[in-house]
Length: 282
Length: 337
Image (tube, rainbow over all chains, first blue to last red; front, side, top):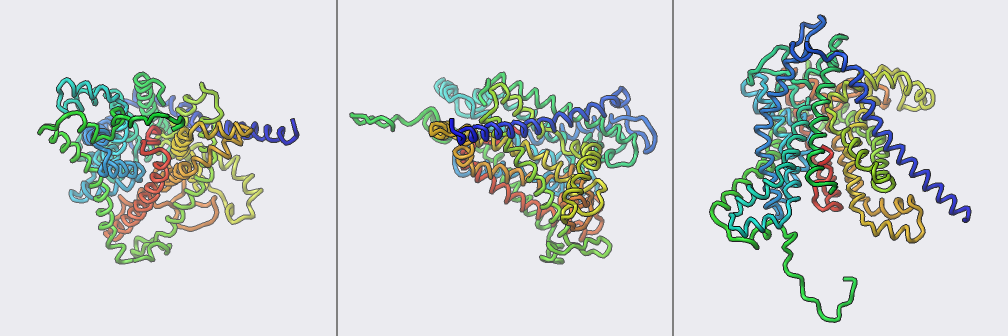
């Protein structure tokens, strides 16, 4: 082996090492963040954390019951608006999306996916808050729904496209009209994947804060009125993390751990379901 | 065709396995009224997206119009931001947005490309899926949680371990001048970097996976080492897609709001030093919009939003075109949550 060959082999080995270290660094970042969340948040999670609303600034104790319920309501309403539209758009893209219109819609969905969520917040504020002069949970839901639609539509499309064409042929051969084939056979077969996409979308918007800042606004009291300002976990973390009190920071870490656990569990369930269904296709 | 047929081969029958969508239906069965209704409903739903993007654009533009009329182009390069005197110039936040995104790319691009090259070219098979999953999980962490972590973990760490040696070595450059109080351009850039790594990594991984095996085999067959095969054959082949992935990450960084707002310091000032507080467009909207009492103030912030919207739309569209050229319309990167 010439010296040159040795040098080239060493260079190859060194570069392999470098990219391995870089990958390790990226994973390390995740591990560090999760470890800090558990280390600083776990000890504050107790019964009161789940059942009490925040106490006045400076006092100790209190919990995030209002924020947990608020997150459920705001995200739930967003899902009610966003999921049907998103799934419909996804079905359109998978079934009729090969022409110009499909191309355009797909392109816009991808571009909207990267639009800053704070801009969507301004949009929702102008339509839902400014006219009535009051911040409201439903305005926050609208903003989150707008964020969901492009996300859900693209995952739905992908999942529907995985359905084998032979199923479609079989249904049509049995005399099913196209629309029933599409809904009862094709979409039905892809249902697991579609539900997964929806879960991921919900998890994603549950952590959103920026579009809620001037729509749902936040609320230190317990409320279920959707026309009133409402607290969410993400808003509470923001206010508490940037506030001056130790007690607030403690609860912010615990709330962050809770939110993170929720998002991670949904993401893992989603991954497990897709794996079961489609094997290791990817 | 790799073989030379002696007899002319009959043309393959119209493909039934992978026809384009419309022909997929029309070749199979006649249309009835309910089918038309079904298609109509789906088309109407699909039209919400084009309408939405037009509505966003128009609404932001009209909200910004008073400020655009009043300040004209000077809005872009003056740096006075005075709600009392009603004079607004967005130069510091435009600078801060670009600078923090630049720092983020500086850190995130080597990391993310390292991840994707390692996962597609070098890693043992059993490592690939789990590591890809863990990196993608970085995209699942909510922005506000990154911010919390940045405030209470990253900034103290920077203050103790990173900034002192950085100042000792590079303190003479304009980029590391001044006292480090914590909230700074540097902290914002680093947080952004961690946040965009999963996006760049996921997309560039799919781009590299789309590079045909024959490219690698050819290089290896010519006697290249494995790294040389990657460097001379695989990366050049996927270049457009990789650039697209990076630009997509840039788009994310430009519009990222909460984490940056919490660590960047939110100061209307242009400083070349990464150790000084700065401001971004998204952070300004997040901080000030709900407190903006006068219509001019609101309009100025809406104009900031409008600029941000137009920039990210252009950046994303450009990135998508580059990626699509490689990945042919697949929803690349959508798996990164």
